[in-house]
Image (cartoon, rainbow, N blue to C red; front, side, top):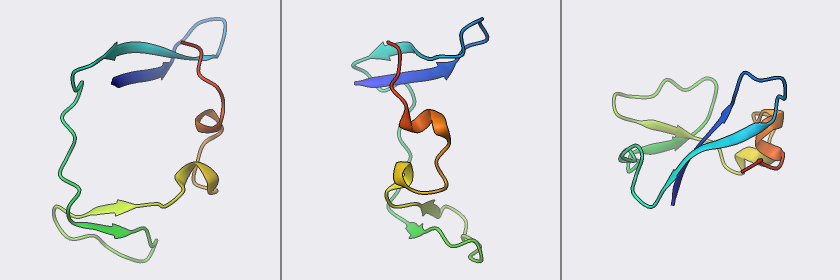
Length: 70
């Protein structure tokens, strides 16, 4: 299942599920050529940077660790 999650401009600042479908909302990119993130590395064309355990690192924003209001 694919989902679009957003923080909507309302009086409440909760994160809400906006769209949900069994089909792909956006076609996933080919992540075959990926390198672990290093701030000193410049990726080549078509190369992706990855961060392991993203939600458990300092890179994650607060909203990623909270429950989502569906």
